[in-house]
Image (cartoon, rainbow, N blue to C red; front, side, top):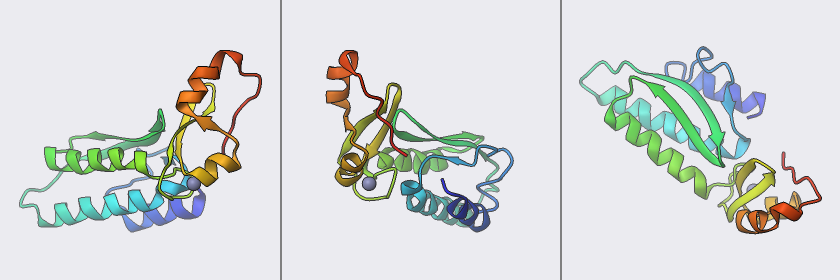
Length: 145
Ligand SMILES: [Zn+2]
């Protein structure tokens, strides 16, 4: 995520997104900024209204196999559910620009992204189905962002 958006999230949610342990910051592209911002707001709202003193830590945020993954320590069931919903939602949001995702694309031999149609066209990548179908015959390196 670009430095400006990264700073915004760190500044808006200092209790939730901490530079330590998030030493790799937000290891995904800018398109998921609004999704992370929304999640931060939801968790904060829950914690503000919870009768318990919620003690948990978000220890890593990354993209894995095209999907947002957020790793926590000590998160209760409600917080985990909010996170699971955001992770699931990431499949419907273009990771590059935040538009509705058209599908999962193969961007490099072992790298996938959910993309909208225009980002997929722009980066000349193919859907994951075509990607796997043609993988053995690939002569080009597909790369986005
Ligand atoms: Zn896009």
